[in-house]
Amino acid sequence: MNSQNQRELIVSGIHLELTPSLKTFVREKAERLFRHEEHIGRIRVELECDSKHDVGTRFKAKGHIAILGPALNATVEAEECHKAVALLIDKLDRMLAKRHHLQKVKRNHPHAVEFNGVELPKAV
Image 1 (tube, rainbow, N blue to C red):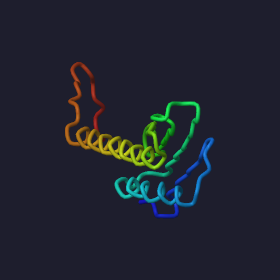
Image 2 (image 1 turned 180 degrees about the vertical axis):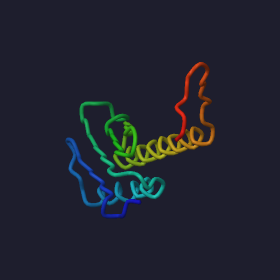
Image 3 (image 1 turned 30 degrees about the vertical axis):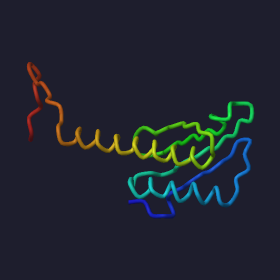
Image 4 (image 1 turned 135 degrees about the vertical axis):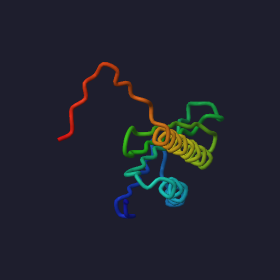
């Protein structure tokens, strides 16, 4: 199991100044993901503000989870930065839950293997 020291959260801003309160908000929200899945090595959150876009899609939050197996990526757009972060964490949480469910189904219901016409090696 990972200890708290091995878990890494990277928060970066593009055209956006990261305030301490915003960093704390992202850290508190991302802690939920670390609690749900113990194999997460790193979570990277990128917050982007584009002043040229419409008011409704001004903030974009991108998330990347480095985990055993394929990495998970998600992108969310919203009119407020805090709302974009909350939506992103919810989306990543759903992705982790789906991944966990698929692994559980695969583990409990393995596919049958056909050995017709194949000569198996003998145990010594």
